[in-house]
Amino acid sequence: MDGLIILGAFNVGYLRMLRKKAKIPMLSLDSLYEEIEGDAVITDNILGGYEITRYLFDKGHRKIGFVGTLKVTPSIDERYIGMCKFLSSVGLDVEFRDNPLVINDRDKYGNLDAEGTFALPSAKEMPTAFFCNCDVSALLLIEHLKEKGYKVPKDISVIGFDNYVPDMNKSIELSSYEIDLSVMISKAMELLTQRLRNPDMPFSSAMIRGKLIVGDSVRAV
Image (cartoon, rainbow, N blue to C red; front, top):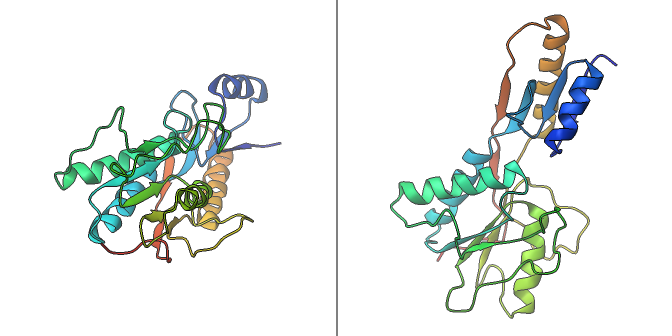
């Protein structure tokens, strides 16, 4: 092999071992590891979180919840940071730590919908909208809301991230933030090819922006 593409979230210790053993160029796709030298192609998660929250704000939502377990993957953290950045920019109070409106969607091992997750706020504390860190979590949230008697988007709006809806029982056209995978793949191949031609060039990170996809799961309030 001439090069390795690392896709997604990995244990940093494993990547250190891989880099030491492989001794060939490594490129990280969809995650950025500050501890590991190498090129990377990533989604602009902070901007995506910012734009999603701005969209909900423009729809009249002021009490916005976030669905995603923090400190499990960098992308979840970055999307939440983008949300907090926008709320702060418009003067809305946001608790970055211990925010009661942050709903865990997975356990610390990354298992979605594990026991103890999707613990919804009380009716009094329920937001008018939820920003979910991914579409799978958004669809799971919709099912949990239905079990509690809420209708989406009549009672609560829901928006996801990735514009990737897996083979699940989809009863609504989900609003989301689309990531162009073909662009990310093309950029990854471009950087890896450059690295093979010039092994000593400085490491670089390419950040790819997405775009908002308007579905039926968000309404104005």
